[in-house]
Image 1 (tube, rainbow, N blue to C red):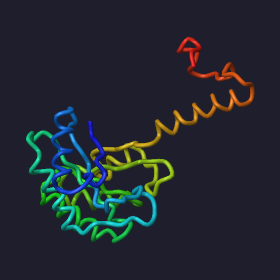
Image 2 (spheres, one colour):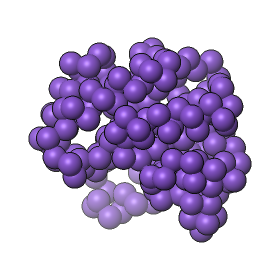
Image 3 (cartoon, rainbow, N blue to C red):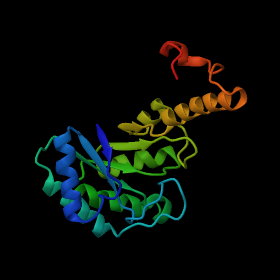
Image 4 (cartoon, helix red, strand yellow):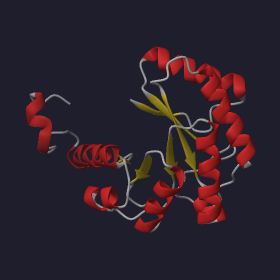
Length: 192
């Protein structure tokens, strides 16, 4: 299980506590990003980044807290949208040098950028494929050919669940009951 710990939830003490707690709970890896504490979605405008040095310190705190070398640390950089490709790669390389086992480059807009990241960092990279984001909805084969090792489909399932829930509530609103739900509810024995 890969767990998103945002910016680490505070300073070095908080990051260390998160790493130890998640490893104890059975997580296999975390990803932590280089935005400021009051972060934004990686595909939205107005993101603010900490310095590369501050993110390196976050990674070092996570590395120092790790008690199992099999527990992996993924560093996410949001620098591509704010600072450009060269700066994003420079950050990613610093994060790997600090101990990150993998890189998550956020809001990538061209397939060739993944290839550049992969060559530059020499560790596995992740592609975040989400509807309505900056990254096009490339196929697994396209991403694999570009050097992507892991694909995160973060939002599709809950958006589908929300659409199904909307149908139920619209049926209730129309008829005052949920008999018109249709779909998968037959498998649940008609229970709401």
